[in-house]
Image 1 (tube, one colour):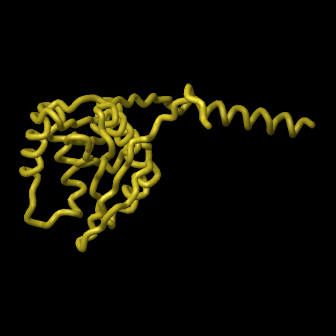
Image 2: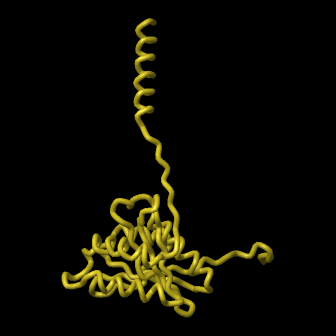
Image 3: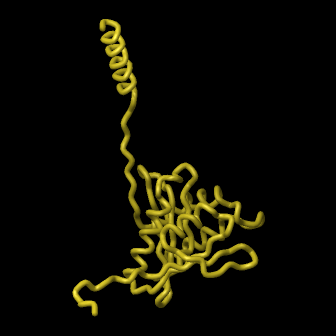
Length: 184
């Protein structure tokens, strides 16, 4: 009995010591609008870290120009996801007549596997469908298995694949059931 009490005290002391050494930190995430002065370089850094889909001659200057044009276009939106004030990911999308198009989505390597891609995509879907959109399309390379898995889990369906491995996916606006009408 004495040994069990001693063992229990040692265990409790060890756990207490271990917990006292842990620092509890909170993670603050928010999605906000693109600010060119603050966000351009961090987006380009994420872009450069994910260059595996580019040919060697391409550089980030074209991407910087694209960001500027998208930001200035009335139907193009760039959203930024920040974790503790650090840019963790981004998405940009465009409205054209009754179609939405997701032009790009990226999450920095150190912020992956936290659901941020899903959060950014959900934000784009919600905002586009609130703008009288019938469906949303995007193009993803067939080698991007994590991205394809994300899009399929979110309801996107493959509609085409070209000879270069670019897959076109489409998401249809969910139909809202009217519970006020009687079914016959």
